[in-house]
Amino acid sequence: MNMEKYNEVDILYTLMTYVNVSSNQDMYYTIAHTVLTNLDKIPNITINDLADLCYTSPATISRFCKDINCKNFAGFKKDMALALQTAQEEIHFDNDDLNQIEEEPQFLVNKVYNDSIQALQLGLESVNIFEIDKICRMIHDASKVHFYGYQFNKIIASDFQLKLLKLKKFVYAFVERGDEIQRLDLIDKNSLVIILSVRARDDLIDGLWEDIKEKHAKVLLITLNQDYENENIDYIYRLKGKESDYTQSSLQGALCFESLLNIIYIRYGLLYKK
Image 1 (cartoon, one colour):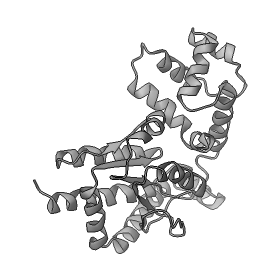
Image 2 (spheres, helix red, strand yellow):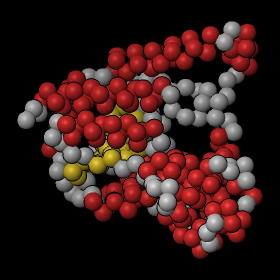
Image 3 (cartoon, one colour):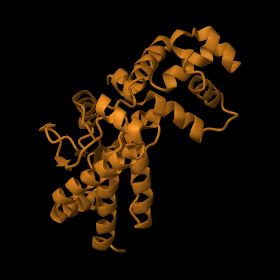
């Protein structure tokens, strides 16, 4: 697996996960917290300097880097540099929108809400209950279901995991990058792997599928990308919608996915009451 592609997307999220779920007595918590609160220093910091900031050893820093699937500290700095470079353009309105927001700040509220309404309307017009039933049946018939996603999609998947658990169906929804990769061994031929990806980047989806195919599991991809093709994926559900073009993060796409999974959850409960 090309871990650089995965870390480029998710390394900031992974670091936040260490802070959110680890004990503050855990050294890896300390390292993650130190990195996140000193982002300006990270591109030029040495391993010895970071170790000093964390009151630990360079060897521990190296182990931490490997734990988050970086080959070494140099690889960690490279992934961080790419993530921070992307974040520089996190919010990027065109000049016309910026001028309107400056003249009338309420324009921003209207724009975000209207874009969200349009995205949900596109989804409403495209969702077919018979396709929902097919997805529900795939989930019901699989002995194990594994959700894979990036950033906000992980949160959506975790929420869906809890909802299905209340319906007596357990599914896996891993929130940490390390856990995701390490737990590929839980997948088998009776598993269903559901990949959530708004944009369905070829390098990410194809790379993940390459790891999963050896397990002979069924794979379902849910995406807003109407053009993505992979004949090896068992079922691609192309949800219509739109994503914002003024942020790097998912806004409307996340709403579209959350709404779709809520429909699947409710329909599953109606079809498979126990």
